[in-house]
Image (cartoon, rainbow, N blue to C red; front, side, top):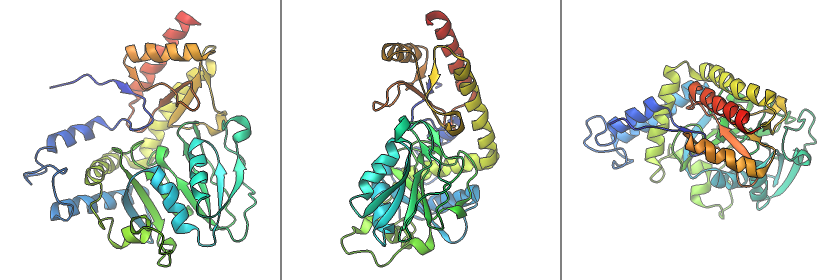
Length: 362
């Protein structure tokens, strides 16, 4: 049976590629002759072990992850990683954070529970509408790491140039741009990403961590589950992992590999974003919220002349088959998240709708 699907512009949980969903649907009752669903099978079984191993191998191939990095699949999302990063990496009790929006602010507030946090750059002065200059940061000698949210989902900014960390470890939250473009993993000490935005279903984070950062000298007060070493030593199978999320993400990894890898998806993402940004740049009714040089290719916030009109556009868009265009409650306005799985046709259709709306209401 074929169901009508809306164009879902949600920031997360978000769209997944339709071919992947169809493959998952075909296997949901009986995974490859096992007689059971992946949701039902033991995480200790040989069948699931193969699923996990293939997922890691495919991700390593996609990102060209060096051998001295571990790939971990950890339950939870950003809220867990905000704490885990600080708990595990604050050896000297000092960390530097770049404040670029809602998610970096949350990470900062959590890290303050575990040590001294220094905000070395911020775009708060202009309501987080740009990425601050990070070419000459004031980083203390005893800093353990420099942390960035590489793409701010709510505020719609992204780093196109990584900070100069003065030799300190770079940690990046890549949640809302993970696997959207090529990435030189060797430039980072740790990358983490909640998978529900651009890869799979909610409930898990992928952590890519350089082996020398995995410590065996953490304080006894750090819970076992929140120690990266626990997951690294057990190949992410210390306890029952989020088996379903690992399985679904593995499908997406294979899908990306089969469709040209990260170079191909980057080209498509740039093309899609240009369609929407070009319209916003010439519109006299809709206005983009981010400085051009720092615009995210994944999350596009924009506004009308008033909050009332913002709400009217959201209602009209939903009636027309475009869902989840309402901006985050903390900033208002509208936001179109155009992740990997959003087809070019979806962005084109949205622009046509916005053009017609503008012609009728501006």
